[in-house]
Length: 255
Image (tube, rainbow, N blue to C red; front, side, top):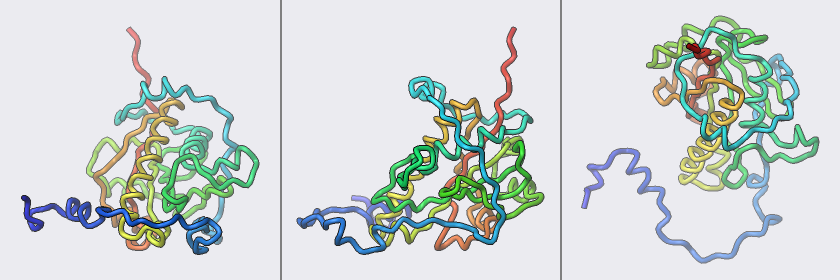
């Protein structure tokens, strides 16, 4: 048997958050849930200027082709990422379904344990058509971008990554977690749910991005607190958990 002292931190966490005994209990009826379990929280920057994104184009994605074409691309061209494509990528990967359906549904394009939706989406615009260089927050309820930090962030952003190829990225999609949203219901096990949820969203981004003809590459090696600092978040109540580079693909030469 492996001694606990020999285990990595990740394995210790896995052991500490296991459910070994399923307690017999009746399901709590929805109308008796605590209010915080039923409330869906949204982050917003009301003092910041907003840029309304173009209305999502009604698209029919071929799932079969999307799955076969899904790949990580690190070789981007210097062509700017199209603004409409940026808007559609955000909406069809992480947006609220009700915006396009014109109803009051708060369900999103990806599953979330208990409907807690702890993830927040930001983009770092480095080479995007119609969007100034800077960091933005994706405001779900209005399908808009909130300006967090405008100006030259390219050099500071690049310094937070170990990969040299990232210099040709058109934009970075940076995902954070607000941990309390899940912890209030699921305790320590919520971290498992949060990372699973990020995986759902990341796969959406890949499939939608590839369908739009964009190059996508998920990045695991980054300086967490460096990105947190750019976004002006504390890294404790909210922290970066993942980043995906997006860029225009280089055209393949024929002949």
